[in-house]
Length: 243
Image (cartoon, rainbow, N blue to C red):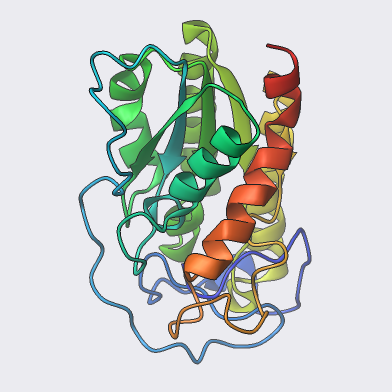
């Protein structure tokens, strides 16, 4: 997602009817500036690489699933350096007995997420962090479709009994204030509808900080993913304390 994640800030641009669809999925320009980012490598269509920690069938810890696209998968980072990897370390250091599972796939849309949700439920997760939508917006897909897909994902996860946290995003300014506003409202409305904690800006404290972003100005470095993990840890904090 081209240099992404400006927390609910709208920038004047073309109207929603003029939104562009030429952006490569998983890419965004920097907040409040037009896009100058070079194309990144094609999306990886395999789940993120969270190192195995012992025999999975023997691991009885409750499961915390990070479910999303390239920001979750750890695109461009070395194995063991995605935010779910660092989240596992943070939980271990604090004595929380969860097993983090990285279910991020680069390039996924909300439709892809909906297609995969039953697989996530089959893992019997205690907690799911949902991070989808950026690729929908970058492709100029209908807000109604994105909202319906994400709504269905959350509804399915809710019925499974998992506790859910939602990470929202924004879009480049050239998509226009109307489209961007409706896009962002999707997350706000669904977080309220399902009473789930909501993080508008996953890369808070990461984007624009020296050494935190890869050269594509889109994905976090290992150092940046450490901060993302801390952001997510704060987001799910109430779930951990309630156990």
